[in-house]
Image (cartoon, rainbow, N blue to C red; front, top):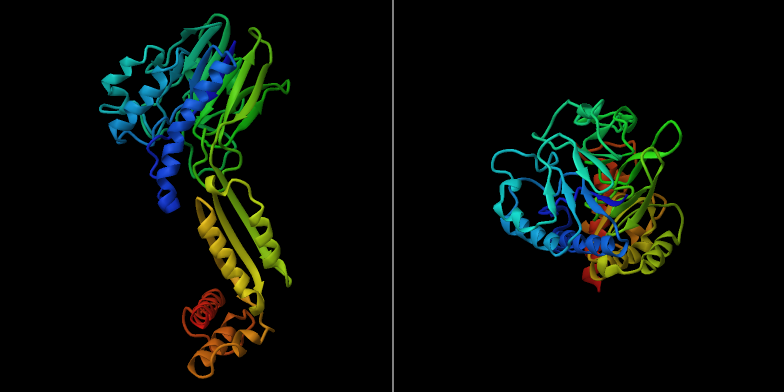
Amino acid sequence: MRFIHTGDWQIGMKAAHVGGAGEVVRKSRLQTLSRILELATEKRIDFILVSGDSFEDNGVDRILVQKVIDIIRISSIPIYIIPGNHDPLVPGSVWDYPSWRQADNLHILTKAEPLSIPGGTLFPCPLFEKHSRKDPTAWIRGVDGDGIRVGLAHGTVEGIPQDEPDYPIAQNAAEQGDLDYLAIGHWHSTVFYEDSSAHIRMAYSGTHETTKFGERDSGNILLVEIAEKGSPSNVTPFRTGALMWTLLEKEFRKSGDVSALLENVDEIPSPDSTLIQLHLTGLLPAAEHSELVQLRRVLESRFLYSRLETEGLRPSPEDEDWVAELPMGVLRETGRRLKDLADPGYSGIRPQAASPEIASRALLELYAVVSEVAE
């Protein structure tokens, strides 16, 4: 048995968190579906499992639903989909759309009952509501099924931090259900879970395209190969994500750190398909402020999307150039006052809400405005 495990496509995701790049992010999620089908043909797999959250929600534009159907129907490879918690099976859901019948190779699984598949039995666990404290895989235990036994579920494996249980799945759920493999969706990073013999028997494929900064290992699908009932699963991740989401954190400690960061940013490949977020902290010498401005310009002009967070930066308290280079008069006095307030060790009277972070940001912005006018 050879199949692809994928999930959490979340077609229709707004992607408002990346501003004008949102349209590219939304399109890439559709385009990558075609790449998955191409890979499935290349690898001669038997079928594809989609472990829920195919859509952002049940209110997505039906044109998007039709586009997904049009992509799927081109292939002859069987595709098995369960509704997830973003697109649960409820009246009026995306799964009621009549055009699903156009795709002969597509199977939308709406019942928790065994299903014969090439080489064995599939145990689907569709969701019928957005939140639940019930284990969606519990029904599988003790249920018969011929050949290789594969589960398809959507939920949270125990041990993942969360405010409250949300479709909880035990770490040994595959063993409890006598499954050779349990394909899980809901969390966007690729994660493997081993059984007592150190064999992978359940996994999150992660989303096929990254959805936000900080996702540990997303943009993948899994190729799963199982020789026979009871044999270990061979699970191989394949990168499918076309967009790169780069999150960098840098603390400035010495002179030259800004230049070094600028060089690192220059070396990032494929900037036109890269979304980048930089979080900067530490002390900034006045002499390197112009390089910080250059860094911002490079980010804004070169990358698909960029966000530069400088709230954690502070002017070097010993560097008098922050004040000396400001025009004499009100601006210089304002700069001197802000520089004092930017020092966490300042012992004078501190106006309400004038935290070191706010004062630092104000001084950096004042310096930037003055520098821009001077140019």
